Image 1 (spheres, rainbow, N blue to C red):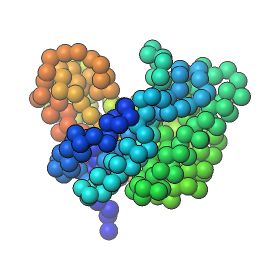
Image 2 (cartoon, one colour):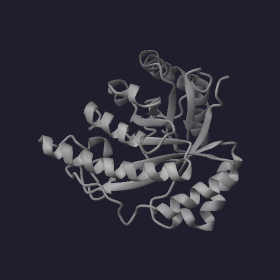
Image 3 (cartoon, rainbow, N blue to C red):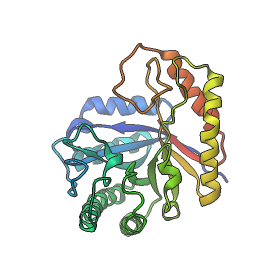
Length: 283
């Protein structure tokens, strides 16, 4: 019997205490009303900049009690939970997490970073285990580190010793997903599919679906190569003119455009959702 697809929505907060507020409970209840069956619960820890080798819970990191509160609320709403820890840069606005590791110059930096990453990810693996998370994401868009296959395999082995459920890694679109050499170590191939679909405003639905074809072929080839299903670990489009051109760009300014957003959502669903290899999708 084919498993039901994971119909997911990301649930994110970037400050302690917010997940535990009554307003967050209302937001989660509204999320459940959409027909979603899963949430991707985001918790972000930090390192100072791309050269740093020390990862920490900053003053902006939700607390474990906040996360436990969301787990409890999700249970009452019948939602399944994928815990998805993120790593961002606390004091380095000109870089992003995909560049971590690019500036490391020696092996000891790598070992320090992976030791710190292991402590960070094991902490949340323990939380996922104690709270009965249905799935765990071992990393997100850390493309500057992904070539360190042996180190990542050790991370995954140590996570599996703690958390017994299915594991996914969320690769960035347009390169990391095809370059990764250790997909066999996790249970699902995860891709944050912010593929650019247009180089103009207001593309038609048929143009958007045509733009998806090569990306669908890329994903299908990964399935064939690794014999794993794919989870779209993140996808979304802003209600903005030009949303199809730079779907990852959360800071762009522009005119409100609800139709372009709706067309992008529809094109993604019509291109991906019926694929037999798609295990789930998190908006």
